Image 1 (cartoon, rainbow, N blue to C red):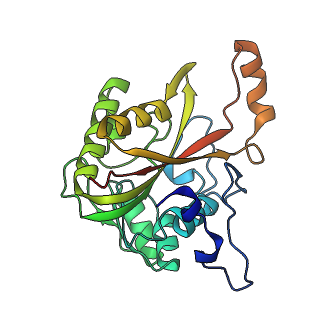
Image 2: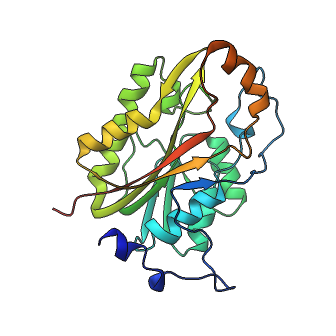
Length: 249
């Protein structure tokens, strides 16, 4: 399937108003997402306090990239936002997460994610994947996930192992949608996007598309700007949605 056929609007399912939910553009400005909890990030960064996974990203993935996929796997399932969208788009969804708190939260919303570790537990067969991996030392998790790695090098090693395990269980032609970003902590730059690209290149996956996920409208730029200006670096206001295809051969 070439890109022209993939975005043939005659094949897309319109919403009730007859309009597409998300237009396929290479830069997507996301709207503000209501935080799960109102907790200050100043001294204790908690996963439960961060904004939910953006609806716009789930919509563009399920409406476009994953529309021909039936069985979706999510190795870092989180709090149930992607599971909820999968139900709306009538997809079979299996999500693993190491956080018991996240599993309970998803269950309370009506979604049965599985308390499992993608680094060790059996990965299900799938023909599509949608996820947002942990950003190592940026957020604090409960459970025994790869965020518990002592060093960045250890995190990258375990992160690669998870993708190796997932890819082996993916059907030929499977579509993988992975939202990743970069961040700074204690003035150290962590490029998870580059790491992810390198892993998928080594797996032999085909990069099908990329969307820049702009957080410019919702980021607190004025708060971050003084330090960025003082130290001479840019304010991070974007992530990337990387879309890969598993080779048919």
